[in-house]
Image (cartoon, rainbow, N blue to C red; front, top):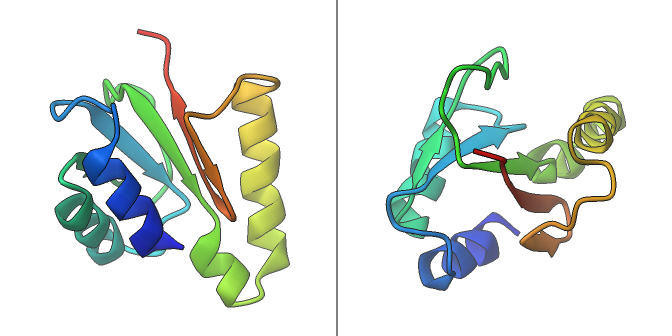
Length: 104
């Protein structure tokens, strides 16, 4: 899932200077890997605090937690997504990864 997302990101209309916040990452190393393979800057915060980060996109990634069968965190991410974006359409929506453009 994440490799397919990174390949999409690399060839997408997301600007190369965009700042994407990676919500749901299991580690800084995973976020860096996605950043390098997707050729875009992804930000990570261990507490998932994206306030004040000046992000232009939000990546909501439940893929690792789904693979670990941690449904509690998968549901928490889905609830956060619903609270943040409601009926807004994701610019990427595949499996357990979604990307939303943030209002600037």
